[in-house]
Image 1 (cartoon, helix red, strand yellow):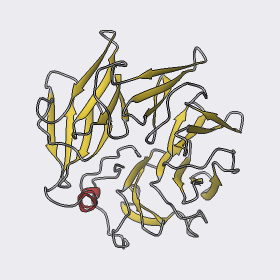
Image 2: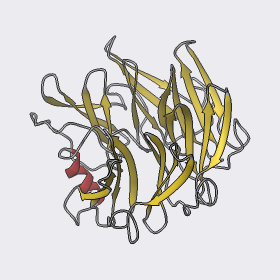
Image 3: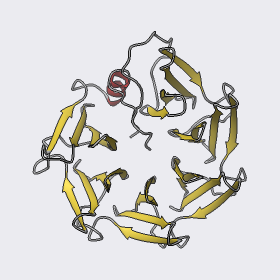
Image 4: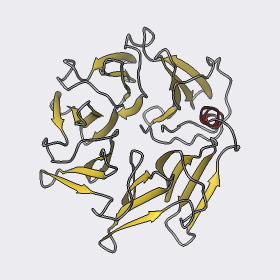
Length: 349
C-alpha cells in the first residue's frame, strides 16, 4: 500500500488524465519548495506527478518518465519519492529489474536520470521488489529486494561523491534470513532495515554509526515480542519510541516497540475484537505515520473503506476514524481521498 501527500487548500483545476492506475497513488512533500506531490503509475508504465504549488495556489501535472521530464524506461512497480537536499527524487523499478532514479535539482532547475543497479552507478543485482529510499546523514540509500531474497543497499555519499553497494542480509552485513517482501528503512539514531521473511518473521537489521557495528533482531514470533506471523510488509514510525507495525493473516494490525522508559519490548493489537480500537479487519496497509504527537496507523478494509487508528500518546487513549465513504473500490477510495484528505504523509511501498 502506498500513501498520500498533498494540501487541503482549494486551487484551480488541472486537466488530469483519466484516473486508471495500476496501483494506489504515492505521495510526498517537497520541503525545499513547500510543494506537495501526489501521483500514480498507469498501465503503460507512465509515472504521473500531480503537484500543488502553495506559492501561487495552483495544481500542476507532469510526466516523469518515457520521454517527458526524463527518458526513463516504463515503470513496472510503484515509485518512491524522496527529498535529498535541494533535489527531489522519483525512484522506481522497470520490467527488467533496473532501478531508475529521475531527479529534479531546484538549484539548477534541471532534470536528471540515473540507473542505480545492473551496471548503472553500481553492479547491484536485478530488483524483483520496489525500492525504498532514505537519507542517513550525508548519504542517500536506495534499498530493494532481488530474486534470492537479498536486500541490496545502493548508497551515495555526498561528502565523498561516491557510490557504494552492500548486502544487508544472507551473510552480508548481517545473517538475517531471505526477505519475502519489500523493506522499510527508518532512522532512529541508527539506520534500520526492516523486512518480512518467507515465514512471516519481522527482522530488523540495523547499523550503529557510533559503534560502527551492524546488529540483527527479530521483532515478532518469540523474538523481541510474541506478536504473531506477519502476512504483509512492515511499516516503521518514530514517535519518541520506534514502532514496528504490520498486518497478520486475519487483518489484525500489530504494533511492536521498545519502550525506552521501562526498558522493555511491548506489542499491542490495534484493531478487531480485543484490540485498542474497533476498526475492522484490514485488507491493505497499514501505513504508519506521525502528526505532531499523534501516531496514526491507516488501513483499507475489504470494502475499500479507509480507517485510521490513532493515539496522541497521552491520557486520551486510542481512537479510530473512518476517512471515506464505505463500499467503494480501493482505487476509487484512494482517488476520492487523494484530493480531500491528503496530509503530507511520507511515501511508502
